[in-house]
Image 1 (cartoon, rainbow, N blue to C red):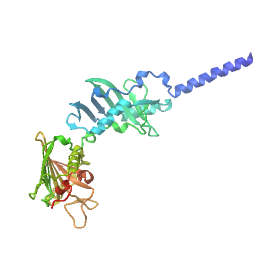
Image 2 (cartoon, rainbow, N blue to C red; image 1 turned 90 degrees about the vertical axis):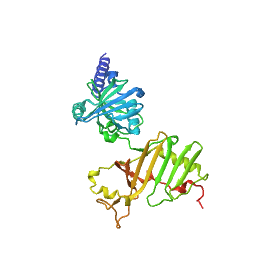
Image 3 (tube, one colour; image 1 turned 135 degrees about the vertical axis):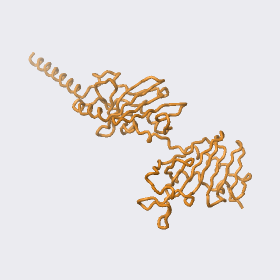
Image 4 (cartoon, rainbow, N blue to C red; image 1 turned 180 degrees about the vertical axis):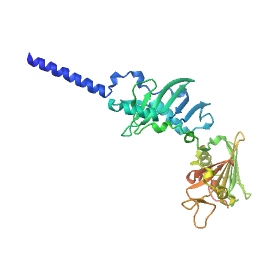
Length: 338
């Protein structure tokens, strides 16, 4: 009998200890399921996302005719928008926050979290707060609006944290598009090399099975064009992006640097609607401290060039991107012209 009592006491003690530990760890069974749902599965119905940080920056991402814009005017990078929507769709609770660190974490969220508002069909669908990463970098602290406790979230199969995906800087979201044409939408491509008329050319897409090609020296292609090269060349215009924007105020002699002497090529594209886009590529010289108009002591930068779009905005561009476009007239032929 005494032995049975001892067993009962030990069992009760074990259950009490287990319950205390479970509570301290924030056992998921004590948490209402609705407070663990951060995800919005139907991302196709999302038409607006508002990101607000504690420094007062507010970024509104809105969808208009299947294109996303930041603050109604800046076309958004498609890759970043795809990642954000995927995050909102797939984010899950990984674990509750340990009770011992709750108070400190709540302070961090109050001062540094990004507020996220997700709208579907014009109505607020979800509102939550995104904090920083866990110590191991494989989780992200988040808390639903109206909840009392934060959680550790993650995306199954992804190793990393999610905070950086909720950036409130509009410039980070800006689409880096220079050219984005489907081949069938291109009407005319003109490439001008100021110092080389033989290599400069005009390509006119006059129909599905007919194009005309001639250079600035008066040579005409006739029927000798390499069809495979032509197809690959037009496909290259599908996605041409700049690396980053140039702040002219930080390069005082920029007008001297972007002179005709340094003009490498001019690319002009007309689409089937008659819309024109012109890009100028300029060599750039750098001595390790500043950019130079030109220098006999330094070769021009072989990796990057200055890019001016439509005579206005200036960007840095990579030759590995633009070399696909600045080909020669002779490149379009299977065999060199005689």
